[in-house]
Picture 1 (tube, rainbow, N blue to C red):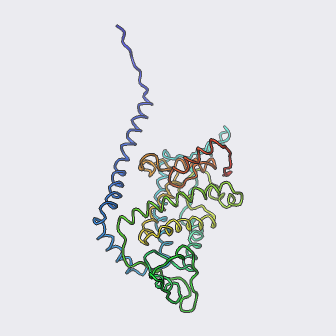
Picture 2 (cartoon, rainbow, N blue to C red):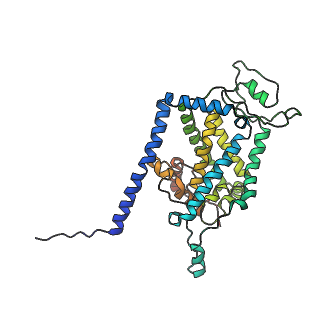
Picture 3 (tube, helix red, strand yellow):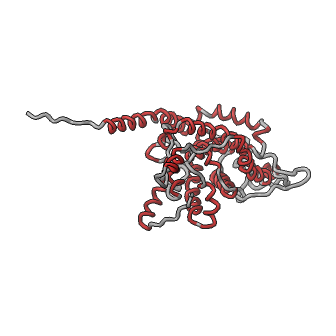
Length: 357
């Protein structure tokens, strides 16, 4: 009787074990996220007292009423989230996903290949920070803030105009159109934003966040393709690709035109569905977190692309490939549009990427 001896592959077994561990580890954040979203939508009464108390506190705050609140909120969250990822990047070289291969086999090129990307200290990035928030603050100070649930009279009054009433007392056709502040000695700049009186439900906040991110992801996808395919826009977008290995600090390397366009796109995605101002407040930290994570250059165990089911999330690995190759993976956060685009590319072909060298 012959005995069949099976020789297992240790590396293959280790790989399977690591993959199984990775799948199991994301069950915790996936369960937490799924529980919060489902209960917020299905049982809003659980959250409404907390949301009402929080919104009343915010509305009583002078800072929350300040017209530049959202810009400062973006800056504060970026100042916290990006350094955390930068420290993670420096301390965990084994997690790096975008190590550039040398073009030659010389020892000199190999040394460059192994060299850690140069990270700039916060003190050396003050000019970058100032240039990033200056356009946004300027827009905050010259454009009238318009939020759903606020009467037209309150909006026009906050913009330095005489109060105007409509039949229903609320903003109608002009909601999406930008309106310049009525500059005067008594109201030299847009310093205050008119806020809705009532807090939203948790159901409204969650659904508006989901829809607004879907809209942003869709619009950004097509605009991003234009940034790569249209020559004029390609020059505007090129600074974002001028770097060595992908790292968290790449997130903020944008031209002024591109930076303003992304902010306006996020605003449009929120305004088109008439989202509540508290939804906008919640949108900022999620938006900043996703932007930094897709640019972090790390394969994280709890990356959002692993936490989301069904391969919905694009993640840092795909975005690193986009930066390295200058084409493909045009999606900012999710995969559905890029999957459809890849199918078209297979049929029609073409190479129109950005040369990031």
